[in-house]
Length: 89
Image (cartoon, rainbow, N blue to C red):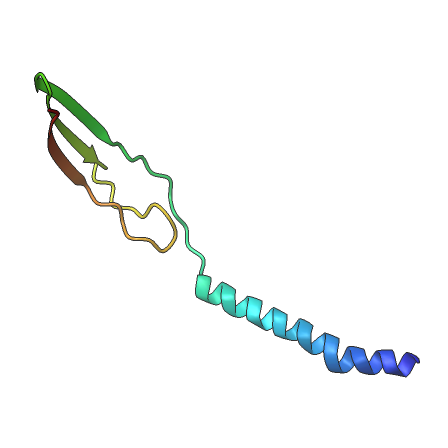
């Protein structure tokens, strides 16, 4: 009985554990490690009512143009400016 357990352990369990460890090491190598320093992102938004039902707005994102990444392996955050006009009937 003991030899059967040892045989099963050597032929099934240990190779599966070894495969799991190798797969985990490969995943960590693909995932990578990086350091992302703290940063300050400032977004500004303003709107104004020109007339009854007519609104204009402007939004600036990352107005300091901090060019660092926000998350691991993502694009850098660019300065973005948007403007709009809204009229309600």
